[in-house]
Image (tube, rainbow, N blue to C red):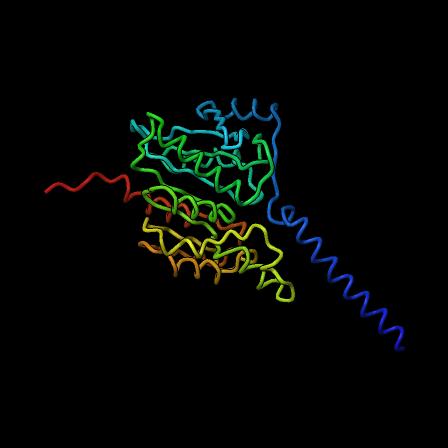
Length: 278
């Protein structure tokens, strides 16, 4: 029995360290789930959405980021929403949804490794690329650089928060946001040394207090991927004015409802109303 116990203990310890090594080396495969498209699919997208301008932006390291600009406003220059998607979202999926937000043009640029964008995703690269995307659109003559709103979904909320800290924006919309990947991982895996393993912490909560742009924060009541408590922690630390909307009875992947659309439209309305006269 004593020998058996020793073997068992060694096996358990070995399995534990194997799990640690696996999580350290292959965490990108857990955090990022790139969805790709082909050039043939791009042709189909162009036929289906002729108003979607095919955009290529060179990242700071030369990687080409691909996506779309959709003019959805009669104003010239146009107010703009820059959208950052979830960890398994290819942004051509969102082109059809732009029509729901009349008066606002959209920038939908895929992360590295997603769609037709080159490279491999990682926190540092996504953050640097977000700056590059903002800078590209903010100097276009058809964009009102004083009226840029950032919008992020799930993983994209961390990219949105980072960019809102680094560049001036009119407002921020966060859908299913989280305080940090580290915080969520520690809650799900309390027996693992997450702080030592994690290379992509996406620490939004440390940045939130310094951001003064008004924010709309929408979370699902029954979110099983990003628990509601993590969204509320981020909201609590937000430095500027904030509105928190909780979609009752919904989970992470069915949060986009009529109520969600209404909340976003109401939030955006404040930035497009004419200035009061006295």
